[in-house]
Length: 261
Ligand code: ADP
Image 1 (cartoon, rainbow, N blue to C red):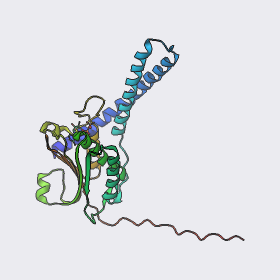
Image 2: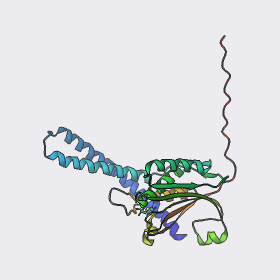
Image 3: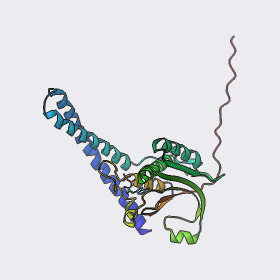
Image 4: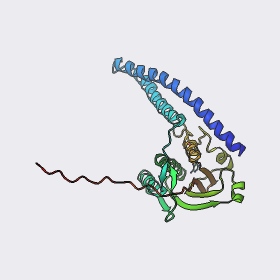
C-alpha cells in the first residue's frame, strides 16, 4: 500500500511540475514558431536558409504537440461521474479501435448480461479503452487478437489482503488483453510511471498508462497488469459496482399542435 501511495504522490508532483514547466515552455515555443514562420515568409524563395528554417519550424510544431499532451495530462480534468452501464461506452470505443487498427488484428469482446451499473465518467472510460487498445495494437505490430472481457468479481478479505489496490466489495472488471510482444518484469514495474516509454522518440510520450492509472484511481477503482515477454499482456480494470438503477430520462410530452385561430 505504501508503494502505491508513493506512486500516486509522485504522479501528482510530477504532473504539477510538468504542467508548470509546460506552461512556460508553451509561451517560449509560441515565440519560436511564430518568428520562424515570419522569417520564412520574408525569405526569398531560393534562399538556402529556407531548408534550415523549415527544420526549426517542424521541430517546433512537434514540441507544441508534446507540450499540449503534457498540459492535458497535468490538468486535473473535472470528473463527471454518473450511474451507467459500461458495455455501451466500451463497445463504442471498440468500434473506433476497429476502424483504426489493421484488419489483420482480430477484436473480440464478451459482456456479462445484466451487469450492475457503475458510477463513472463515460468520456474517461472511453479514453481508458482507447489508450489500452492503441498500446495493444502497437504491441501486436499488425497481427494478433485484442480481447475485451467483462466479469463480475467479488473481492473478499483474503483477496483484498493480497491485492492492496482492491478493497472488499463487488467490482465490474474489464480485461483488455492482447497477444502482442509482452513485457519483461522491469518494464511491467514501470508502465504506470509518467513519461516511461520504450517507444522510439516522437512515437510515445509515456503518458498513456499514467493517465489510465489516474482515471481508475479517480473512479475508486484499480488497474493491474499481467504480462510475459512473447506471450502477451492483460490489463484488469476494476470498477466498484454501484447500487441502484439508472434514473430514467423523462421525455417531456410533446405539446399538442397549436390550432390556428
Ligand atoms: P507510450 O505508449 O507513449 O509509450 P504508455 O504509458 O501508454 O506510453 O506505455 C508505456 C510503455 O508500456 C510502452 O512504451 C510499452 O513499453 C509498455 N506497454 C504498454 N502497453 C503495452 C502492451 N499492451 N504490450 C506491451 N507493452 C506495453
